[in-house]
Structure formats: C-alpha cells, structure tokens
Length: 116
Length: 221
Image 1 (cartoon, rainbow over the protein chains, first blue to last red):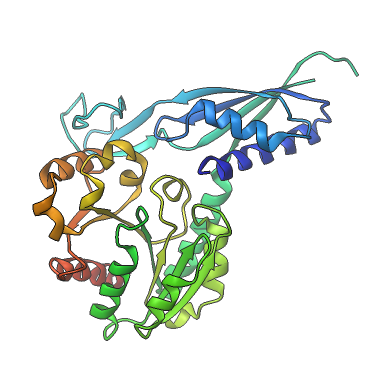
Image 2 (image 1 turned 90 degrees about the vertical axis):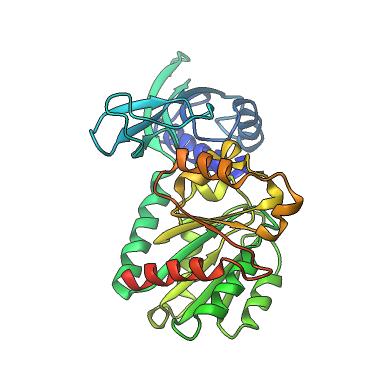
C-alpha cells in the first residue's frame, strides 16, 4: 500500500510524456531510485502493472537503477558515498568529521522512456 | 508512423512538485509566525498521547491547533478537542501519509494567523510520511520502546529527515531488551544533528525537556 502513491506519481509523469509524444505504447521506463527508499523493485513493478492497466503504459518494464547515498562533510566539504545498510558511524574519509548532510540518495527520478 | 522503439527524455523528479508546495507552505507560515510541527511514528507509538501531553504543558503559553490525519476515523480529533484546543481531522481516504496538498487544505481550514503552534499528527507509518514533505518547520518522530532499538536500521529515511526523536514508553524499559545507548548511536549515525528525548507519556517522565525544546523552537521562529 505504501508503494501506491509513489508509483501513481511515476505513472502520471510517464503518461504525460507518452501523450505529449503521441506514443502508441510505452515499452520501458528508466527510473533512478535512491538507496534510502524502502521500496523493492519487484513490488514497484507489480503496482505499476496494476495501475497502468488499460493505458498506453500497460506492460511497460520498470528499469530501476539505485542511486547511492552521498553525504557532504560539513567541516571539509568533501562528498562521499556511504553504505547505509552497514551498521557503522559515517565518518568523512578525508578529515574524520562525523558532521554531514545528505545530498543524494532519496527520491524518484524518471530518466526516460522507451516507446513505440 | 514507424514501430521502432524510440527513447523519450523525461528527466522529472516525482517528489519535486510536492517539495515545491511544501516550501511555499513553510514560507507562508514563517510570515504568519505559525510553527508547524509534523509528528510521525508507527501506529500505537504514542502520537496522540504526546500531543495531549504537549497541549497540557503548553496551552497556557501558546495558542495551539492540531491537525489529525487518519486513514478513516475521527477518534483522535475528538480526544484532542477535549483538551480545549482547536482540532481538525483529515481523513486521507486510504492514503498512508499526508502530502503538501492535504496539509495546505487543512491549514486553510484553520485560523493559522491566530495560532503559534500547529501540530500535524501524521498517519501512523514509518515509510511514506518520510518521503513526502509537508511544509512543517520541524519534523519530529516517536519511537516507542516496545518497537525495538533496531528501527533506525529498518527505516533509515525516517530517522534522517527528523529534527527530533522522542523515545516514548520508557516506563517499559525494565521489561524490554531495548538498548537506549545502541539506539542513540544508530540514530546519530544517520542524523548527527537530531535532538533525542527519552519520555514516558504515561508517567510524565522526561516530558518537561521535550516541551521546553519545542517551546524554544516555536519562540525562535
């Protein structure tokens, strides 16, 4: 159920561009999903299939690329990638500071569509 | 028209529209000097209990309004209204979170100009509310002791987007293997700037520190 509103927003974007480009059928949707997202690829596809039924995006394949979590060090300004699944403290590899802000790794970005 | 597959460039962020409206809400509220707090937690973590404790401690000092979001009931708004503050209920109609559009319609229905603090009690859920900005000045979450100290590992985004964490039901600690220090460590790893409060809404322990923080934040707006 949590997937529904997210997938619905993705579908809206897909349909808007499909209609603007007068496509007959959307074959694939290239998505970038942040690693902080809890949504699983398999379920995203299932919800997409359910919501897209009867429209030009019916049957389209979601090609999902995970974007890594990137932090920016508050003290020295270095950007670095972190493995969020590891249970350890995030430390700047350059200066050792633990202060940081998230610069990417959340959100959903529709990159492009493959369509006929 | 040929049937060849073509590539159509989209480049759209689906959270962008919501974020833009949330930003507008936040700017408008700052002008009015109304502090919107977005309170998030799992079902049963104690959101309504914390709201009630907060009202009891602050209603003499601040003009408070409450926006209760629920999938399909009026129970929470009725409880809160008994505390003598303005309360509205938003039925999300199956939606598992509040987005900026829903918050905007709720705020429009409240006399926000004459309120210092509006508490948005979001839908009980640790997933989607973290994804959708509401326009709140501060995000606050509750983690209750019976839920376990591993939740920061399971719902990292929620712990990353909050300015304060209230660990509720500390009266349960003696019966549980919840490790407060381990939990703090996990949360601070995700979010080094977060404020953490240990509270029991039932006994009232720790409520004072939480309320003082919130009061100071409202006054600093």
